[in-house]
Length: 340
Image (cartoon, rainbow, N blue to C red; front, side, top):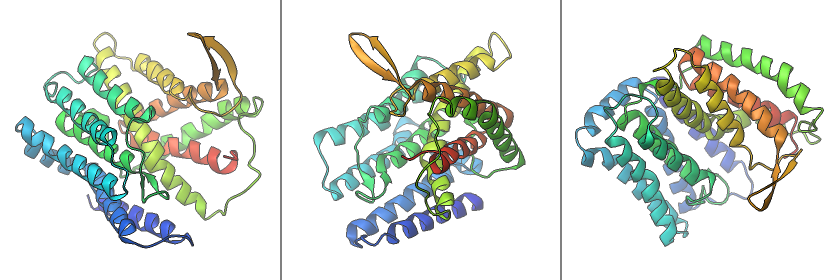
């Protein structure tokens, strides 16, 4: 617990320092409220990475449905309050967080004593928490305004962990933040295998990977890695490994002890989830009366990378190892080989 809180404090300090280091930053009431709210949501998210905290939350909030929905109501009030503070409150931005937070919770409340594998209620809940963000249906507000990261992503992460780990009781998600030797060992091992045997042989000949022409100061690299870990690696690994792979494996174990089918399916889903990215090269396809530009190299490499992320998840039983590996892969690409 102490590690999680210290890590949250470090994140808040680095986030605040990065914000105030910009010369055009205006310190006003919005900025102060933004930082306080950012800190609250980060501390809440990282506190739930402790098993003792999760057990306490289950004792408090699984007694009845009213108690279970109370923390989500707090998240909803924080969402509406912040959107109103930055003067972007609309009817749509008030309705979508309501659906996003409460509908999956209601589905999983009735499913909390069921076997921990995929079923239609789990599937609908996953699709809601995934596609509402993927399709841009949630409020598009930054924290702090115009300079930070997606505010609703922090709300969503808190909501997802609470709904699936506390209400649904999925212990097998493996949500923790304190790394051990195995986390680093498998992250480094699979990073080397992926880069040497797949990323370089596929990325360079296809021109998907090319060395950046504008180098950022090296001191920014750790900050970039931290940002990727918190707002790309961790969220995507919670979704694709902690939920999709985990629940698929639980279902498929009924017929076979192998996790390979779940690994294969979740990796393909992860690869296809990148089909809407705009990184060349593309292959043109005409489907359903529409021309589609498919970033084939991105999809293939993402599928293979997803396989390695899944292996790290299987080896350690935690989403931390694949989140670290995911951060290493994206950080290596973003800093050294991507002009975007």
